[in-house]
Image 1 (tube, rainbow, N blue to C red):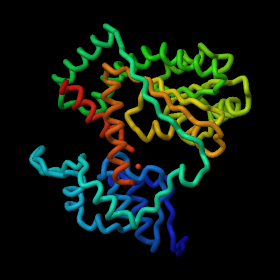
Image 2 (spheres, rainbow, N blue to C red; image 1 turned 90 degrees about the vertical axis):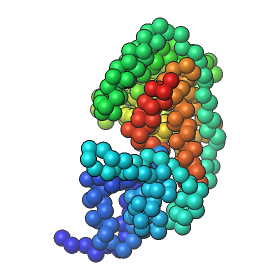
Image 3 (cartoon, one colour; image 1 turned 45 degrees about the vertical axis):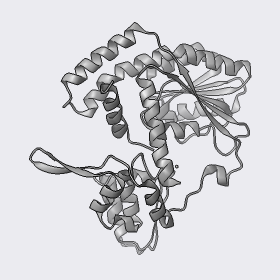
Image 4 (tube, rainbow, N blue to C red; image 1 turned 90 degrees about the horizontal axis):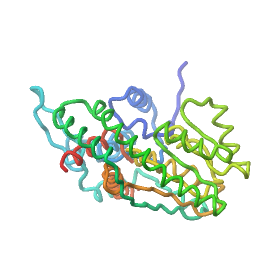
Length: 336
């Protein structure tokens, strides 16, 4: 059946920023047939200007008329020879103020703080020192392996680094327990996020009488039960969740504190998780606590996340793929 639409609205439009993805190709085919397109997203630029290009192209921004010109001007793009052919490297960021100025007529940006009467969100890093012979050994073994296997894919290197991240998350639990206890002493409800199942289960086990979990293996009904209990039962003080499973799509405005036991590579993931508490219905200030082991790979991740946030803020006047982030973290680690 044929339809004659005059407007297409694409929600969560950042999912079509990758021009090679099948969903992007499908979206591109649809919008070609319609005269007007609106793209809705809270994260239009996921870490670097190249991720912004396809969205700008769909809304017919003038900066996309010349792809080569765009990547050279705004992505620090250049060509290299690889495998007998030329390829473009477009991971950089340059002339960001100019990019914002030249695209502002196509962007209608509204911050949550501008349109909602919300209290403050306060983000606080807490820098710690990790003293662990096991961590030093694991990092040494990883760097030796990485030096000998520089041509391995990012996914393989990421899996190798996973053990170090899990070790950091485990070592962090003592600090996380202390922060939770401080919240309980002040009679505040708290959300705790982690990337890993083992620390999640340990936190839930320690506070089981006053805590509810949310993790990927739970059914939809079980997840909603945890949310409802945290929101409606005054005795349930702690919501402990996997950051991917519980970081989007739910409302937890009974919480006044959000604690990140360990970091995601993706700043947008953490921002979304913070905002489970910071949304319509929140009456109190929200404190987001980031305990960071200063002398570990975690500090490298944290610094990189902050750098990417600044790039986005410059362009949007305000995220990052895991692959981009991980590649830069590896370079930083291997330069030490």
